[in-house]
Structure formats: C-alpha cells, structure tokens
Length: 152
Image (cartoon, rainbow, N blue to C red; front, side, top):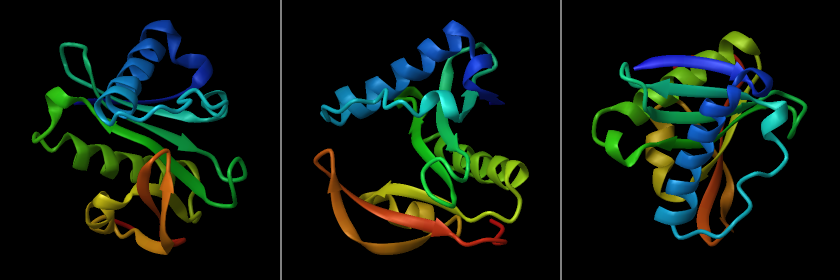
C-alpha cells in the first residue's frame, strides 16, 4: 500500500471523490447511518490515503490539527475499503495515522472518537478510553486518547 498525506487543497478532484465515496460507502450505506459526513472540517485537515499499487483507495483517515477541535490532534473518519478487510489494512492505517500525527505535531496528544466495538483495536496502539460510552449518529462511541509523548 502506498501512503500519501495531503492537505485538502492538494487532494485533487479524483482523490477527493475517492475519499468521499469510501466514507459514504462505509459510514452511510454499510453502517446505515444517516449523518452529514461533509461537516466543514475537511478543508482544515490533512487526508491520509492508503492506495493500492494499481490505484484504488483501500484506507483513509482524516488528521485534524491541534486547535481545530480541542487541544489534541484528532484522528477521524478512519475507514478501510470492504475489499481490503482482513488484509491488515486497518492496522497499517492506524500505525501510519499515528506516525503522521507524531511527525506533524510532535509531543501533542492524539484523540479519536472510536466506535465502542473497536475500543480494543485502538487500545492496541496505546489509546486509552476517556469518559463514558455515548451515542453518536445512532452508534455507541467512546473517546480515546494517546497521551503526549507516547509511542506505538
């Protein structure tokens, strides 16, 4: 898998389309969740794309800089293509997302709003639950944080 991390202005229409299509396929259609995916944050964030050597987008995450939604950097919209599941793409995506955030914002803690059933997956990268489970867009979530200075 080829990793690219780009600001919104450098995505280009093809990559933007692929990212939005993957997000909609999984978050809206597969998870049967009606919500406004295009929430106004994409322009302020970096977009991590994991593309197959032959082109298709297999994995994606949105990296939100500190100060945009709180003091921490935020990893969001973590998604793998249904075609890539079981291949380790999700684990590779999270490892790359954490590494990119630590490169971009050294010493800053990382936060994510995890779907609750993925708590153990994110904990395997060092993320710790913060607070109680809550419902967001009809799905149980829990906030998780990788404290400042921690490495995976």
